[in-house]
Image (tube, rainbow, N blue to C red; front, side, top):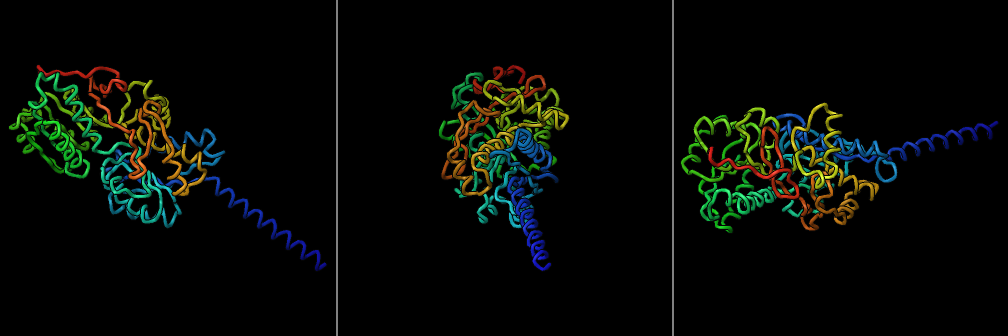
Length: 410
């Protein structure tokens, strides 16, 4: 009897152990990725829009069988409303949730703070949307960025002025007067700084630079200073509310600049055109890819738009969701190869991962700089508001129409 009892006990222990092992094995079939975005607070509009792109890429991958032979990917969200919250949420994801890889984050200040925590913890941080150059200039071991930094926007500003705008104005490059109005966070400050550096090399005359707080409710002094400078080209760097305010008060105060070029942020959002109406038509915008682009150069773009509308019941609100979708698909490709979230293995595989321009939904290629983690093949495009739609106009391979200049009415 004792032998039978002992046998039953041993058998039960074996069953329990087997069930426990099966549960542990099941856990390894789900790869958990931290997703750190401003999902509430002042930055929530584009933070949520950015997260949607990540979410769609993951849902699409899981629906198609997962990665690495059937493993599902699960997003563990963190709400980073500002830099302090970004540090706290990164610590929570890493230390309480056991996350080894984090994606984010739209805002440069949030990315800068959260990636610092990730670096100290040996956790790989993938940035899909924040543009401040110093995020990757630190040459951290555990950061990768798929989107272009702010300095790339500045390069396109200058190149577009040099190659296209100057001829339209009928002036020599050295005679073109350029002004800058920018919000004063790292986003606006970096773009303005690099524009100054590049303009000096090209002998382009910067006649006025006007920094301001994005939270201001009055830009009249900025506009009057710009009006006095009489620029041929105005480069604006704004979030949504200040972009709308700048446009409205410019009309009220009679600031008429022949060529206005935005820099992403508020100038590429549907909310901007909804708030400003016909006044926005003609405005150029150097920014992330939007949705009226050459679809032969952006394979997967139309599929993304359909996925977005099906899930959220509306058109994409800006290109931020698209670039995060593209960035997450790169990570999913790397996960498919590696099969786990180990930071060192993912980083090693990512540095070997390449894609040519014109082969992704954004049109960007992929080649990570081994020193900085920056994708060297990402780049902004020039779009223009035409009849209430933001369409790609430059460079030619990405464009759907030529840029339109209405200089006689300025």
